[in-house]
Amino acid sequence: MDSSPIWQPYTQMKNSAPPLKVLRGQGVMLELEDGRQIMDCISSWWVTIHGHSHPVLANALYQQAQQLEHVIFAGFTHEPAEQLARKLLTHLPKSLTRVFFSDNGSTAVEVALKMAYQYWCNRGETQRTTFISFEGGYHGDTLGAMSIGGSPWCPTFQPLMFPTDLVPFPDTFDDDPSVEACEANTLEAIAHLLKQNPDRYAGIFIEPLVQGVAGMRLCRPQFLQALELIAHQAGVLLIYDEVMTGFGRTGNFFACLKSATSPDILCLSKGLSGGCLPLAVTLATEDIYSAFYSDDVNKTFFHGHSYTGNPLACATGLASLELLEQNPESFQAMEHQHRCYLEKWLWGHPKVERLRTCGTIAAMEIKTDSQSSYFNSIGSILRTRFLQEGLLLRPLGNTLYLMPPYCITSSELEFIYQTIRRVLDDL
Ligand SMILES: *Cc1c(COP(=O)(O)O)cnc(C)c1O
Image (cartoon, rainbow, N blue to C red; front, side, top):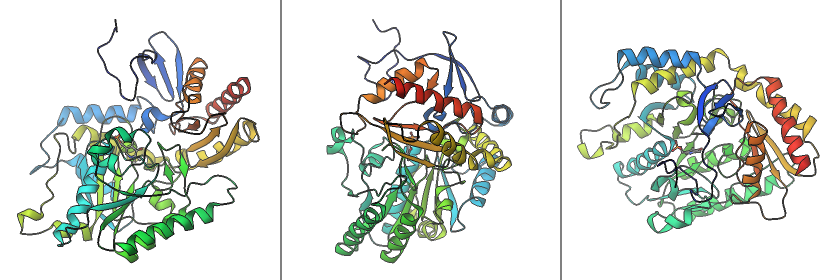
C-alpha cells in the first residue's frame, strides 16, 4: 500500500523511490526528516534565487500578511503590485511599458499567446493564428504552452494541441566550430516561413540565451540580435520566455539586457517572487497595449485568475528584487567561479563533453553509450548517486547542470565540482 495519497508531478509513481520529506531549508541547505543535510545545487525547481528561508523575504511576507493577504485584482489594486510593476520596468528595455500579472510561468506564456493573437485581431488581422517557435523549447505544461513547445513528452497530447512551425535552435558550446552555420540555417528557415506566408504569423517565441528543459542549450546574443531584426522587418511580434532566464540567472538581470535585444512581449515567473510564492508577469510594449485600449468592449483583454497579483507574492517579489539590486555581484560573479572550477575539476575529463556556462548556469553532457535524450537513464543513476553524496542535482537526461542559489559560497561551489569529479571517476 502507498503510504501517501499524493500523486507527484513528472513522476512514474510505480517505480520511483518515495519522495524525501524536507523539514526545513536554510540558504543552500535542505534538512531532511531523517536528519540528512542536502545541498540544493539547482535552486529547487529553478526558483530559489536567494536561497531557502531568506529572512528578508520571510519578513516581507509576514508584514504583508498582517496588512492585506489578497484582494480581487479587477477594479482594485494595491501597493505591492504597483511598486513591483514599476521597479520591474526600471530593469527592462524602455520599450516595455505595461505589466500584466498572473501566477505561474505556463500561465505567463498563455497570456502572451492570447495577447499576441488578440493584438492582431484588434487590428483587424484575424488570420495570424500561427507562431514560430524552437525545437526542444519548453514553455510550460498548459495546452497552449505545450503547443509551442518541442519537448519529447508532448506527443501524447498532440491531438489536443494547435499547430506551430518549429525551427532548429542554434545551440552552441565552448569552441563550437559550426555555430555560425547553425545560426544561418535557422535564420534562413525563419525568413523562408515569413516570406512564404507573410500574413500567417502572430509572433516568434523563444527562450532567450538558454533553453532550460531542453538541457541548458545555449545560443549566442548575436543570434537574438539577428532574430530581432528579422521579426521587426517582417512585422511579427518577438516574444521572450524569460521564466527561467530572468532575475540574474544569465549573469545579467535579464537575458534581453545581456543580448541587447527588446522583445515585444516578455514572460517572467520562477525567480520573480524569490522562490517564495507562485507569481508571474507578462510585459508588453505600449504599441501592444494601445491595440486593446478602446471604447469597443470586444477589444478588452479578457483574461485573469483568482490569485492574479496576489499581495503576499508581490511583497516577496519586491523584497527579492531589492535584494538583487543591493547585491548584483551575487549573480554577476558566479560565471567566473563556474569557469575556474570547471577547469580545475572537469576540463578534459573523459566522461564529459560540451562544457558550457551562462551566468549562474553551468552544464555539460555526460558521455554514455546510448543516445543523448531527456529519457537517457544515466540521469536517474546520477541523481541517486549525487543524493548519496548530499547533493540535490537533477540531470536532464545525460545533461548535468548546476543552477545554484546566488547565496552559495565559492567553497560550497567548489565542493560540488569536487564531488561531481569523484562520482564521474567512479562511473
Ligand atoms: C518552468 C518554465 C515554464 C513554466 O513555468 P511554471 O511556473 O512551471 O508553469 C515556462 N517557460 C520556461 C522557460 C520555464 O523554464
